[in-house]
Image 1: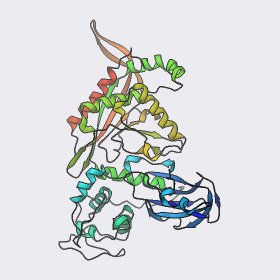
Image 2: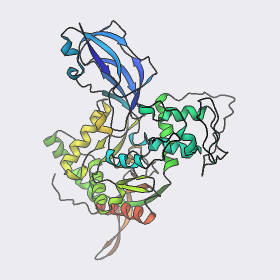
Image 3: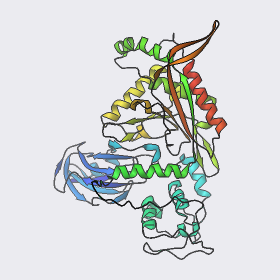
Image 4: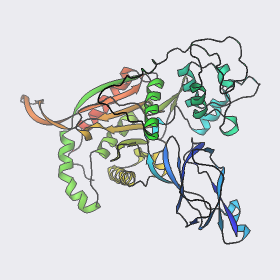
Length: 451
């Protein structure tokens, strides 16, 4: 009998820990290879962790509700075989199966590529004990929002890898009564979780939530864990980025007529439907090439320009949760490639088959509010991106057309587009010009193209 180590899997480059939601097997239970053993959760996804080998469930090292660092051993599986088979080098890699997901880009504040993160980390202020201490952008944003000074932040006990302060540590510290009005001028002593340190006055702080008085015929429904995450992410994005939204109306008649003409033959030839989504993504990619600053993120006073164009497409699932699969390197695909990639990701999303890589690395997001019959919307930016485009419902309207014989009124397919952008790095001229360029590409759609 040998032992296989079951380790906490890595769910993405920026994920350093995960929470054990539920053990699906008890010690002594028989397990089959690839059979789900436990459910875990991060800010990005809820996942099943499958068994790497068949055997008997051995020691469970962490209880449900415990947050564990990536790579740590969380349990053992006893199997028949030699000790060599039980060595870590012989342990198959665990590929988590994604079962449910909240809005990705809003799960963290401003993550950057590892090569950039190394430089940024070197610029972080040193802790009071003279050693450098890394703080994630999410932790720094939470500290700014709550008015927590750097001196106080350096003394918050960290439970993350290497003593790093995590989101959980910050929430616990704030819950235990961190004041937000006093300002300190000298370093504060080490802080215990139950103490109330002095902190600097925040530049701006949202008004505290007003306790609702309920009476009469009401029902109070507590948010579940996923809805709480979504709520936190929405608030975090608004606190991080000053949002501005611009609108244009586009005549998409040529695009609509072309799709109606080719969709039957396309379905017969490719076995898939061609929707408006790949056509919209194609226009966004062309406009991003013209205005590359839209494809960026902000880290302090640095703008990180992304060379890869990875388009996230927000999709509402029947459960009501929102998921954002990402089309990687969309600028390198033709329309057929975009169509198949979009359809494949939508299928995987609706059947809970998305892998962690499918929801990572987005640089710009498209959301189609027209799916719900809405003509326009003001979407919230997916952090750490700086812009998100919403497309409204396509409606037939009378419109004025300029012809060589004069102006005429005709029935046209019209659609509103709205772009929310981060005003720290994108001003109205850039945001408005980019949005207008997307509309121009849609209006200039070639109705005779082949696919």
